Image (tube, rainbow, N blue to C red):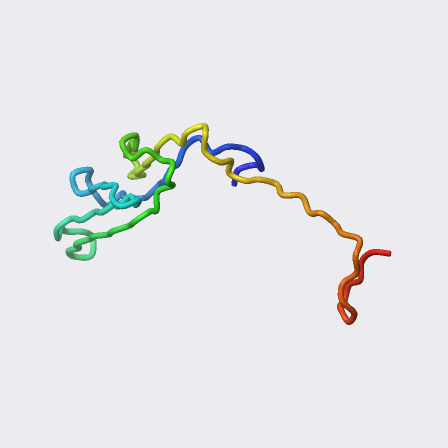
Amino acid sequence: MHPPGQKIRKWRVNMDVAHFCPSEISLRARGGFLEVQGKHDERPDEHGFIARCFSRKYRLPTEVDVTKLTSTLSVDGILTIEAPVPETSAPAAIIIPIKVTRRQRPSGGPHQWGS
């Protein structure tokens, strides 16, 4: 969570893809979404054989320039995809003050303010 008023400088997604080699993962930005897919053919494991696949879509913020998306894969299998968010974009949160009025609620309400 970002403190109120702080701007988000990067859009980022982290995924555990430890069961996939880099060549088995594909990334594509299309139609305002980032699509991440992974697939490997059947291979032996400690229980016999296994084949895996996944597909995940993330909605990209409109201010993200898809040509600036980057990805890295750590040695422990964490895929990180990120892109800078322009300084001109809106802050992560804005505090909106609550204005207290001096008029009473309609009769019968549990709280009556004002005097």
